Image (cartoon, rainbow, N blue to C red; front, side, top):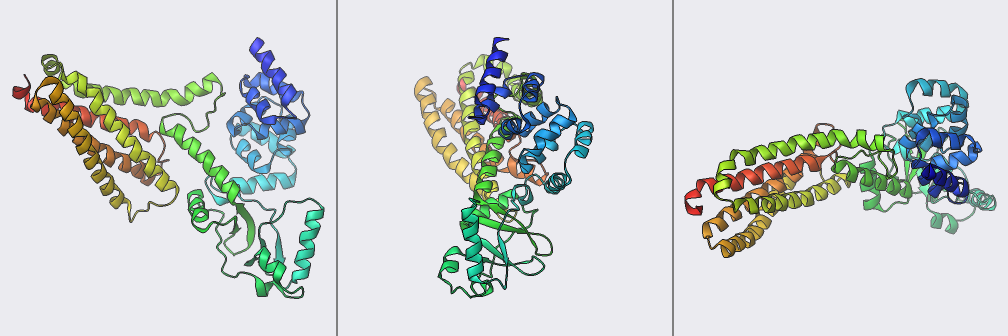
Length: 437
């Protein structure tokens, strides 16, 4: 009860001055209690908190309100965040909310939701500045000055369109200021404009802005009409969000889980993958069980099992991290995927050889048995090669099958390195048991 009262006090105190902190406090409350608190706040203030909550948490809170209350909050929330919230609402509840939203807001959300989640259409802005190709330089500069007086956001680029709003070019601010006042903008515009479709994947956008260093990219429809722009800061923010989601997915947590998500939400998102991990652990354990009697006779083998498996897991995770980054930055394509796999196999072989020699020397020095060192060294090389190959192939295979390449790749990678490492080590030791006993 004290925890609930403390959270409510934080929300009331910081909702207007520090909405981020207030939102974090809201996440510590059960949805019903948090919704009750939001109900007592003005819709505009409640919307501030919603802007700083993850969409799943926001949807859970709105689901506790009446449709009219939910519509009032949504109207005051940014349309892109509102669209992310809306797609997570219960279908029956969302049907009751739709008639209560004004027509323009409903239309904007419908357009946003029509685009794939990882696309330019989801993060583009429609408040760009465009001029007709016959506009004069003086008219454009006058318009920019008027914007400054009204304290509207300054435009990085000005776009040039024809009578049908088809994109013709882009105006560089320097060229605009240096041109004669009566010059038509069509004469100074940059005609070779890089543009994207609203369905362009976010990974492609990331690769484009990192390669070209653009501050904004125009978005056009199938007829070439300018419909929005994607700012670099939006792409970066979206990429950071995806990166944090990928880290959680990599280790079997939900991409939508946050630090203060409810315990039940955390349990339902983590437990299925923990169960999968348990099943794969039994698979690795079954390999060890095959050699149970042999390990009992050569007990020193048990000492090296976690070393072999752990080293392979670490090497595989390094490869996995590099491959996931390469896929995000669009460095990896079907035509060079096999070259990547071969490179990682080579790296695994060399790293395995070096660490295998070190481990073999330690085993030889410890037990005075060169054959034990050979067994450990061979197993290390085999497992490091398997780690490099699987660290590259698992995310590529998941991408080919249509799944998120980061989605619990770590669990499958650990299974491979454990099974291969244990089997390589124990089977080699069993073949040379006459030298070990």
